[in-house]
Image (tube, rainbow, N blue to C red; front, top):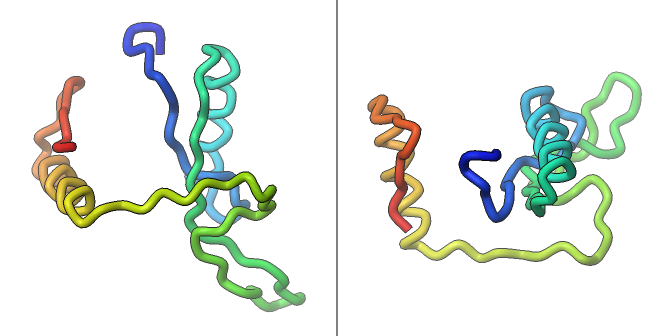
Length: 103
């Protein structure tokens, strides 16, 4: 954080459904506090209203507790294509400390 000095941290929201996702959310929150950097979260999935023995309703891209202040960001087709290219590069192990993904 001290070397990179990001303007913001993007992470997954705490949803209580996946320990890796929840750990990333917690870590980002602590780093954001420590370095005074805004943290942007995205909701992936969660379950709500399950009865004993059941899984409940699957909620996709909705926060567990919505405040009414959430922002929706529409992603263009070009951005999705760039994301795919970046993922392909990473899957080919073209990883370095200075990887750049197309904008």
